[in-house]
Image (tube, rainbow, N blue to C red; front, side, top):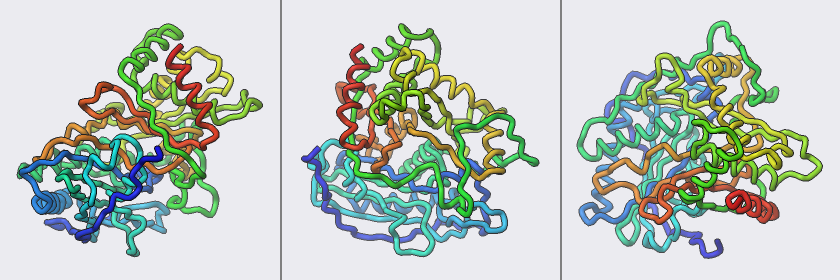
Length: 442
């Protein structure tokens, strides 16, 4: 999109470290083997329409106070990552060093920045770039509130993924909104990660072809699930309406077996897996295998189940494998069922085996494609005193291996649909789009 606004004309009004309102005794926080491989930052932007009852000073003051109050319960979010050389693993030093709070203004109106759903690289100006901060120890959490000329606001949040997953972040956001409204925490966080501690001795009871070992002479801090390097890529946004999704479900039923696995996530993921794999491989590799990875929440799979107030990473990466020939020639329903089998595989026993494998091998999931779904997080339903977000979503950075699924904005004719966000080398886009539209039509 050549008409994208590339400069949001942001002025930083204030930037400071904020400490928890109440501090606790300093401690080291154990991080599970699931947490260990997620040492990268997650950036999100929440856009709100103007509310005449709230000016920038009011919003900033209320947010800062609520944030500091929240950090009293989430003390690890004000801590720092530390590599324990004796244990050879990451941990969080809960030292109350602080989180970042920024107030900024834009010379533009929110309408002038264009389509909020499109992954505009300029949205990176609405979040704090923690990794770029000129400090020896990097904060684990940051909030930036940006005021647009029209009175609309954007709240940009950044957190290191070792601190929490998407479900935990939604609970964090609900508590922040509750405190801003003068109410108590929505949930009291449960932050003991030892529920996912490896067994002693570790027992790897399954094969794990989705996992790869960390190279020798590398710390676990050097290699993670997300490779941030990328070549020249072009962002694309594909919008699937509810009708498109229903057609894909119908195709899966007609070309496979009826079953509970014919879900929105599975049919959309099958679509993008087929198109991405076939658009980026050569004809002489048809018998080679493509591996797709996607996150599965473990909370309901444990006995007893974990409550939603569990604060940490309670997700593991499921996988499915198929040859390029299968992706091209097998019925659509067959590919959808492969994705379901990947989820069904993730029993508590399998999850414990993955955690124990990590204890022995210090590795991480590796595949050709990683699908990250924001469809059920529900963060657009979180109510602040100035309203619910008009839209929120991740700040997207170019990566050829990651595909994002986000819900569409409320109030659109396509409400209930799915946004597919990806980055591709420009020469692969025509083939991808041909396959994409062909599968939607057949």
